[in-house]
Length: 107
Image 1 (spheres, helix red, strand yellow):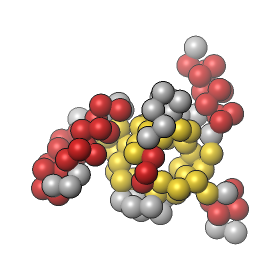
Image 2 (image 1 turned 180 degrees about the vertical axis):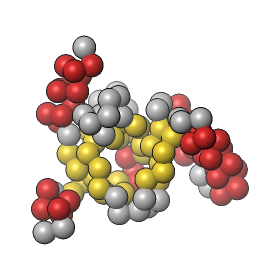
Image 3 (image 1 turned 90 degrees about the vertical axis):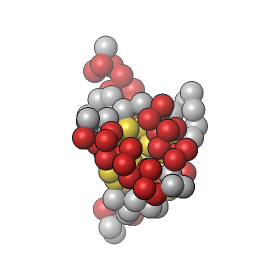
């Protein structure tokens, strides 16, 4: 089943570049929580580090190019790296811009 999911996701994957230092998490609930507290840097940092420690979230560097697909159920969420590391991570779509393959490779 996960192989079928990975194949389907690979078919609709595109490349996205992080506009800002951002994050990816295992669930949309964690993404929503971090987005809600993002305006308070100290609270955000403490909660983010806790989620990273427990393996729930990862940091994504500004300028990083990743493979992803917009979630059909929630267009504000980008599912990252699902084809290479199922089920991938969820990240805020507003932190990314879609790039062409030539931009990804730096050409």
